Amino acid sequence: MDSTTSRTSGEEDGYYNYEDYLLYAVCQKEDVKAFGRIFLPVLYTFVCVFGLIGNGLLAGILIRYIKLKSMTNIYLLNLAISDLLFASTLPFWAAYAQSQWYFGNIGCKVITLIYTINLYSSILFITCMSLDRYLEIVWAFSTKNLRTTFKTCIICAVVWGISILASAPDSVFIKLQHHDGQCICIHDYGDEHMSVWKVILQFKLNVLGFLLPFLAIFFFYLRIACIINKTGSKQKSKALKLVVTLVVVFFVLWFPYNVVLFLHSLQDLRVISDCKISKDLDFALQVTESLAFVHSSLNPFLYAFVNKKFRKYLNNIAKNICRRGTDYSLKFSSTSPPTTQNEMIELKMIQIIPETQPSVDVS
Image 1 (cartoon, rainbow, N blue to C red):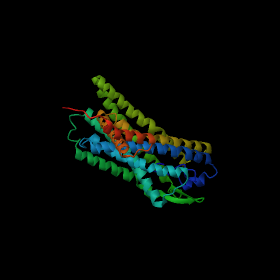
Image 2: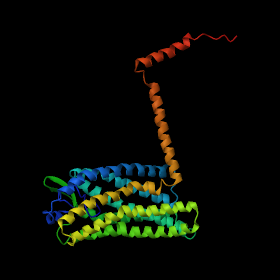
Image 3: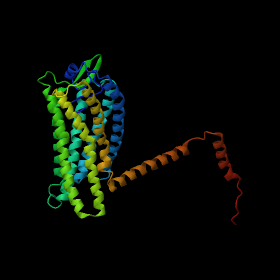
Image 4: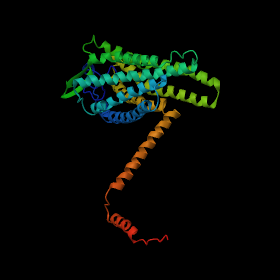
């Protein structure tokens, strides 16, 4: 389910749009859909739970404890909001993968748009954070005027604007349709002339959603690594490892999905027409897409909780929760009536002991 596709496994047509159904009707994909009904809901639930918890904590810490004056923190807050909105759509897609679309035509359009907008914005905000670190480390003295709160907010507004524009075609092509008595939320590209839009929009996701951001991230962190490597300190060595980790994780999680999506585009161009290959691509798309989604739940740990300050606030929140839980437990136990015979006997003994103890003469 990307900006040009609907939820893959839940559709009665097997994949993507109604034209695909007509083209590949002889290519039965029941095994693909059966796999998706089990695999996708489990993965989506996992990503949703960890994404909501991790990004919710990150947003809470940024709003409650940290002043939003630095570029990094503003980008982090926007990234957390983007990932929260993205994760909030996954229960709908999990239900769809399990059976059919239950949420009406408006829900089909709105949830798809929320999903797609935040898919783009999450990747672009990660790129912005890489740019910020590049400016801070490589051009530390010459870019102070560029790294202001006001200009950062403008950049965030531009990112949201680009994400909305990139997702706009979904509002045109996404539709609720009925097939074999079930509702399906799909991209309907219409006749052969309009179906060229599908290939164009898939290439758009490849370029804007992965290729350009990855090249930018790779360049920024490569320059940062060169500067860090020149210092040679132990602390800088840890920073270098973190830089390498960020690039590798982004590449490993997003590259396979974009490769499979590109191969699907070749299938739409009739370069690939074999039924078995089509099935293999469908299996691969489900797995690689879910793998890419994991990135939204990892972002808080990759970009925030590796920082000592964030870990400190996180520990404080955990301690406060434990303390409140303990206080509530003690309060509850002190106000609860005795429920067992032994507890009643002990209570009576406590009440009797002060009266039976001998008085002490202090004279």
